[in-house]
Length: 170
Image (cartoon, rainbow, N blue to C red; front, side, top):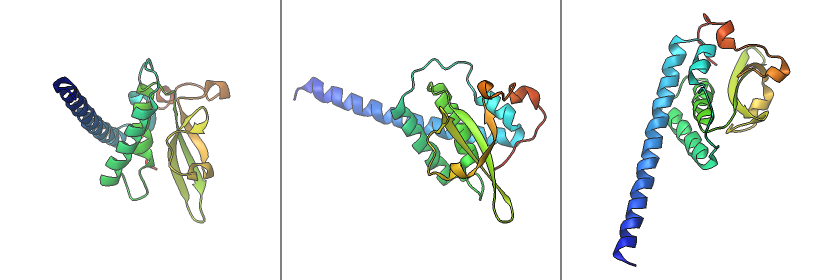
């Protein structure tokens, strides 16, 4: 092994480590930003803010896997509320997925338990769950989707239709 191959291997290892921690920091900042937005803006306005104007990148499954892992780790360390992390998790993953070129949709749903309503948020890609842990999403009736499915006749952008709604917490 020559001198240059050792230096090249060391450089690539350093680059991988820097990228890893840069991604970890970026994910933490997006999770924090989403949580702050949810405290002051309505859900449609939050979704409008986190949706990029264009999706020009090609989807990268490896990067998306890393992002999903880091979002889950941040929310394990700093939980959103006692009921769960699905709401900020889905919004943070939505932010990253759309920027990575995945045309995902944000979904909210409800289900009735014995004495109360329960809510859940998740992402779908081509009407299938996207980085959703478990199958519990199937027990919920979808009550809100973003962006609206124009083929299903869901109408206009809800951010335009409902500018004064307060943030919803599931």
